[in-house]
Length: 333
Image (cartoon, rainbow, N blue to C red):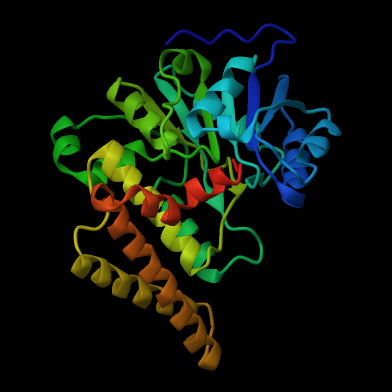
C-alpha cells in the first residue's frame, strides 16, 4: 500500500454532523465536548435542527456551531443526515446524536484515524458507555455488547458468503453500525448515501457497504456516553420499531411466536437478576429491581414480536406503538 498523502494544510478533515430536536441541557455538554477535541487537523461541527422549542438552536449558535433549520415534517433519519453531509467539507463524516457525549478529547481523532486505517474501510464506529446514574443493567448490557467487537482496532468484512446467507447472527454482526457514534468516508458516502428509511438507516447503510466489498472498523478508544433507561412502554415501542425494521430491511424476525418471546423474556430476567446480585444488590432492593426488570424484558420481547408481525398490524396501531413515529409526530429528531 502506498503511503497516504497528508491533507492540504488548513483543509477540513472531519465534519461532525448532529441532527437536533430539543436537545436540552445535555446538548450543551455534547457540543462542548466536541469542540474541546484535540486534533492535528481542522474539523467543523454542523447541526440541523428540526423545530426545537427549548433553545437548542441558540445553544448551538452561541458556541459558533453552523446551524441549519428545517420544518419538523422534513426530518428523516437518513435524509437529514445526508443533508448534513451535503453541507459538510470534511473528507470524513462523523455522526453523533444530541445525547451522545464524547468521553475524551481524543474521541474524534481516534474515530477518524480508525476509519482511515485502510482504504478498504467504508466506515467506523465506537462503543457506547452508559451515562452516569444509568441502571446497572444498562451499564452491563452496553459493556458486554461492545466487548463482542474486540479490545483493539478491528476491521471486518464479508469473507464467508455461505455463512452470510445462512447465519442471521453473522449478518447482524457484519451490519451492526450506529449513527450515534460513527464515521463514514466521504468518498464512500458519495457512492452509497444513507438510505432514506424509516428506521435503522445506519445498519441498512452498513449492510450495503459490506455487500459492496468494503470493510468496517471498530474503534474501542472512540467512546461516547450514550444510553437510555426507557420505561416499560418506551421499551415496548423502541423494540417494536427495531424489530419492524429488521423484518423490513434485513428479512429476519427477532421473535417468531409468543412462546419464543416469553422464553426470551425469562432468560433475560434471570440474566438481569444475576447481574444485580453480582453488583451487590440484596434483599428488598434486589427483589424490587428484579421484578421491574422483568417487566422491561417482557416489554422488550413482546415489542419485538409485534414488530416482526407488523404486516398484520393496522397502520393506526403501528403509529400508536411506534416510538419513532410518535417522536416525529411531535417534530422530534
